[in-house]
Amino acid sequence: AEVKGKLRYAAPEQVERRNVDRRADLFATGVVLCEALTGTPLFDADDMAGVVQAVLARPVAPPSARRPGLPESLDGVAARALERTPDDRFASAAEMAEALERAI
Image 1 (cartoon, rainbow, N blue to C red):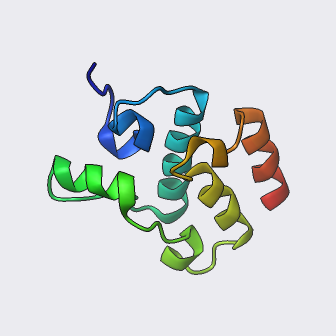
Image 2: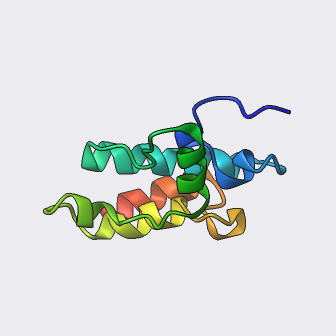
């Protein structure tokens, strides 16, 4: 099975070709959230191997560290969406949306 889509937005379990569920989409949403907040790519690298390594292991700086002035309340939402272990992420898009509403 091949990994479909852009690797920069793939959840670790997709990159490793393990079973995926809706929480993989929440990881991708977390990537988009961080990129929208900071205006910079989250998992940027010179080649595909570098992107894979970044998705699997590179520490993720909170959005407020990369863009001063952002509310730190958004950092927790982003961090939870980007948990590398699916069980540590939001269980649903509704749960993530509620957390975002509380954060802002």
